[in-house]
Length: 59
Image 1: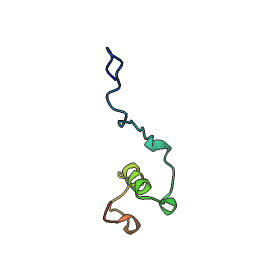
Image 2: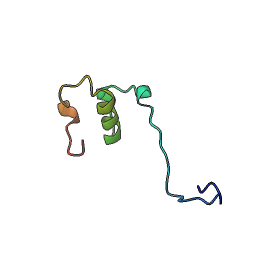
Image 3: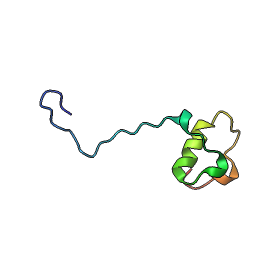
Image 4: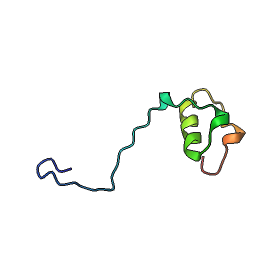
């Protein structure tokens, strides 16, 4: 939003905040590509390799 005119810059721009520490699903509970990405990001320091169950073209 323009702070002087209060005109909205774009109605298509959104911010989504993801709190990774609150993501507590285990590997067997993952359902979507998004959840798999978050799981990998959260556990990256613990993983030596991406587990075979998570190896997909998009990941």
